Each structure stands twice: as structure tokens, then as C-alpha cells.
Image (cartoon, rainbow, N blue to C red; front, side, top):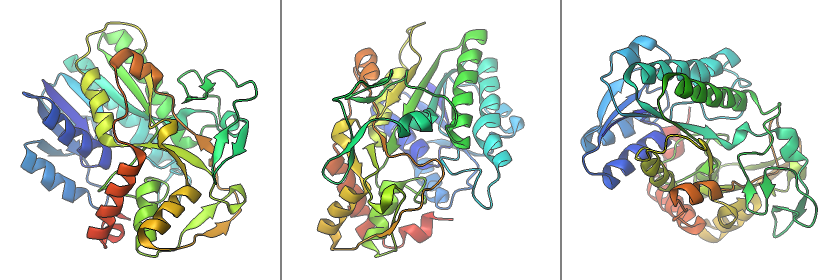
Length: 355
């Protein structure tokens, strides 16, 4: 099997490439990356040593994809992953659309020409911000939690957010590009008869993750705490009770491995993938964990709300469990400890991997 991974030098793309090579004999992986992210050259060297056929290219350019050989599957892991993308100085809304949507059209055209299957990495941020902010929540152990004593809206349960939860706008500029990419992928797959799987991923975290607070918050928080960098609880009264679930990219790899080897012709194509309730944690709880690991370091409280922030999201992955036998294997504590060990051995990581 030949697999092309776009954004292969990013955290998710590189983890998928390395994990698939370990899991699957006879697999051949091609990778393409524009190397825009600081630190991506480190992954390029590591992946080349593992035998990944690397191409320095940009999937926003059709010609860069057209020059690649045919493959059986494309895993699209290339995107600007920040929910604030398009609002920030130095990265415009037009650039966001070019990175996260126009590039997907080029990938789909490549899949059409070569009849390659597509595995699209999407996000939990395709869900309605208003609907998420309106969920009945309660405080528990310094975190927001879902109040299951009241009637819940469709697509939500004690296990978390499912694929049928509302995607009504606003969902952020970032979320809208990903939701539109999902729709295009499904339409191309149906029109040109190639398989498509879509994973709406929760927060991914692990050692070696690059980024800024709005792209890899768990990794950033642990590294910044260890280095005594300033940290802030933004919004929600400055309490740090906002809660997300986290899972390891190796768990995502195990799901991707099953999907690219699945021959089912029809049925559900969109799945939620995340750590679930057992891997959910708030910023306040993460700070308490860091205090135990590195010594006390208190964030400052900034009660002012920030665009697109939400108090609680936990992904319900039962559909993936039912259809693919997939379960999260990495517990929360092992993910946090892995990042902490990386922070201890790479004291300059924030400088290496941040813009």
C-alpha cells in the first residue's frame, strides 16, 4: 500500500507517518510539506531517516501535487490548526481559506485522477459555538462538566459530543473551512467513486508537539509552566475551568490504520475521535498537575472573553468503537507525563517551535 500524507512534517502528520510504518508491513509513505512551521525541519530529517519519501511542496499549488506519483490513499493532515486563524495579525482570512479549503480541492482532484481514497483530518471545532456555550454545565473539581440531570440537545450525551450535534454557524472561520472541506470531500467521493473517511478530532497532544497556546494548548501549557513562562486563564471569569478531552496521535494512528484498510462501500463516513470523559481535563486541573510535577507556578486571571472560546468539549467516539473496534489506549496521565519528560529534556523547545 502506498500512502501520501500532506502536512507530513507537522505534529499530526509526522506522528501518523511514523506510527503507520511501525504498524503496517509493506507500507510505503510519501510526504509533502511546505515547511512553513518553525521546527518542521526537525521532523523532515527524522522522517527521511525512517524511509519516508519527502517532497518539499505546497498543496495550495496544483502543480506540486500533480508531480507526485499515484498512491492508494491520501491522509490530509495539512492545515492551519488555530481556531483564531484569520483573526490574528500576520495571517489573513484569505490565507486561512487558501490553506484549509482551497488546498483540499487540489487534494481531491489528485484523488479523483488516481482513484485514491481520502482520509481527512477534521476537527471538533466544526460544532456550533452557540450550541456548545448553551449546554447545561456544572462545576466539579475545578472544571466544567456536563449536567446530565436535564434534557440534553440532539447529538450530545454523557459520553460527549457526537457527529449529529449542531454545526450551525458561527463555528469560527477556522471551523467553517474544515466543515466546508468535509462537505467537498464527501461530494467528490460520491461523484468520482473513491472512498472517503473523515475524523473530527478532539485535542491531540504528545511529546514533540509544536505550536502556540491556541494550537497545542496542553503541550504549550506544560512547557511554559516548566520554564516559568507567564500563563493566563482567559475568559470564563478567569477560573481556568474550561475543559477539553485529549488523546495521543498514536491512538489516531490506530484508527487511521483500520480505516485505510477498510473496504466497506457505504454507511457512515464521519466519525468523532477524542479522549472521551476519562481523558478530559481543565486548565485549572492541568495547572495543579504541573504544580505537583514542577513546583507551583500560578497563572494570572484574565476574565475578558476571547473570540470562539467555549467552556466544554468532550468527544464521543462510540461510533468509531462500534464500526472499527477503536479505543483510546493512552491514558491522560501518560500523555501529560510524556510531555513533561520532553519539556525537561528540551528546555528550549518553545523557542525552537514557536513563530
